Image (cartoon, rainbow, N blue to C red; front, side, top):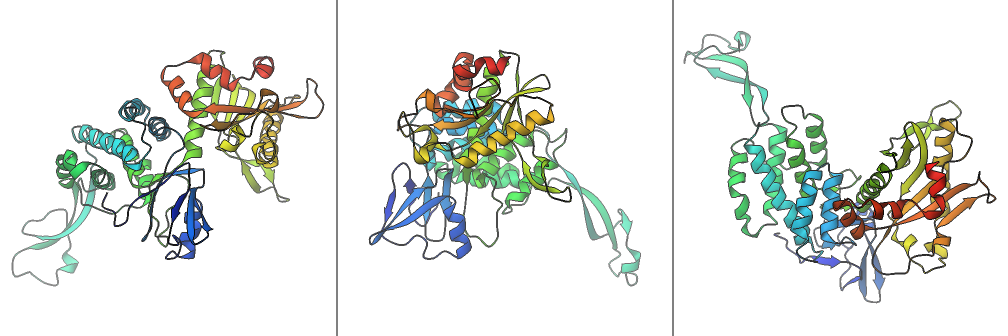
Length: 438
């Protein structure tokens, strides 16, 4: 990477700098940066720590930070590619990244760059996206529609101004692939591996500086002939912008790629739950937002709700699982207290999801619910007795909420070897087994 300033690694321990990292930033840039890292004054110095939810590269005019993911590079890439809709590449990335334990930016971005080059080469040998573009040109022959009204008389050179449609490969999809290759080259030594691909795609499209929404547009335009562009565009987007919900803003000069770890963890929980419940004949479904759960006095949507996952037996819901990327829930010792306990907001939110879903399906008993939190290195997990919250008296109709602790690296390894038993133990607490399957 051609950076004017060294890249500081923000990992498990704070980074101490001697100059204020926020001094040259605008208020909007500071607000954007505060979502990624925390900056505090420490005497005559400043400490930078990761916020916990994001990983990736952050660059400003005077600062370059790599926010390390709190789990292995191999697991990070595996989940990133599965979340991006590239399960066939997830195993390849895992194998490439498993050779080392470095969580630095070059390890992660180099693997993505290598995959980008490989997939772009495969795509170039397949169907190339094309479209008709309208052109206006003065020609010596009539082509398309002559624009007689714009001639202004008989031209001396004998040409005719015409408007015609011409097939071209200079379309958004090919421009984004070229931008992805340019982004990948920054992470490969000298960029030699991708020079051939750069030449190929430059012959197809003009170079552009894309915005994040360009990828959304290109993805929405894919069809039967261009569906092979999906994996390449996903890799290009990951290299250039990362993976998160935040829209890009022209007035904020903070460069990505940054990655929302909550999205990756949600993917891990979904895959583990699907593998665990499949053997019991149950299905796990990622939910869409519901706008009629909370309405105002006029019957209009007040706020939408969306539980992450619902376990179904046919069309009957059996359990609600909400993933929360909050490692603090998995630490705090056998008897957690304070911030190590589930927050009131998370408890009420998940109980509401479960109650609403039971109501919609005319069930008299409340659905069992669960909050899944990541179990990372360090800290002592709470005892099983402190991983359950009951609403009301202890009887058969009590609403129940379980805390599921999900080890990220072990979870990815279990998925790769299709370990049903391991996944079953994670998502199906012993005390709740009968209640879920009956």
